[in-house]
Length: 369
Image (cartoon, rainbow, N blue to C red; front, side, top):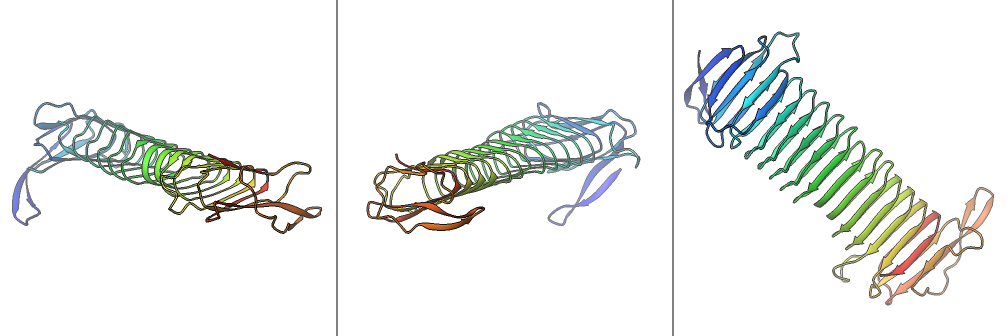
């Protein structure tokens, strides 16, 4: 059957379209976009050496409509309405093409791709090799596992784990009930996970998880929130904002200002700025837990440390910097009447960056780097 198609410039072109029960084939060149709309599992072998795309379907109930054009080839599957799975599509293509794949129900397996890749499934897992271009991988239910991605990346799953290698651009991750794991991300990251989030290195990171740990080994800037897990970073090169309802917050090396709070857990921050001239303020708040900071000796800072419910006969604020004359006691109402909070104020090198350290029940340690 001959199909008449209007191209992007408005001129008419002829395209060959065939309805075949189990086999289809189109010639392709480097940069051709391969579009597949399938029903069932998709297995894409990108080691093909011929300048063509071959499609085989193992279920005779599926008919494949083939549309071969110069810049784009299409393979569209048609099947009875009651059929939503049970077919396996085997596709052989060279890896120097772009992929645009969608299946109504089934898993997707794709080899290495030199171009861009869009992969979508209404219900199944996705496994992909290295993708040199940009990538968007979306599943309504299942895990996503990919190698390195050269450009921007978008990975979304309604209930599965997302695992990806290095990413050469920006990244966006979202899963309602799974774990997120990523390697080095050149650009920024937006990550929303139902459970834990782990990122090796990135620029700016915005990470939110309902009930899991957030671990970012190295980042330019971090904004992290967890409903019930710890937040940790080995190195944050810019500002940090973090909150967890229940869990520790630990920054082994912070180069800029820090604002962190936890309902129940300890806070540890080591301030190691590249320059002492920038904004280096801190606001660390723990409901129940200890607060520990390590500060550069040459930092200009004004420290205000408060323990709201100090234990009896115990030093609750320990500082290696001399305090200024004692501030008036802070009064607060406790369950059995009034008690006096413990407060310590210190000026380092004449004062400067405001550092507020507060815990409801715990200890505060202020150390020199």
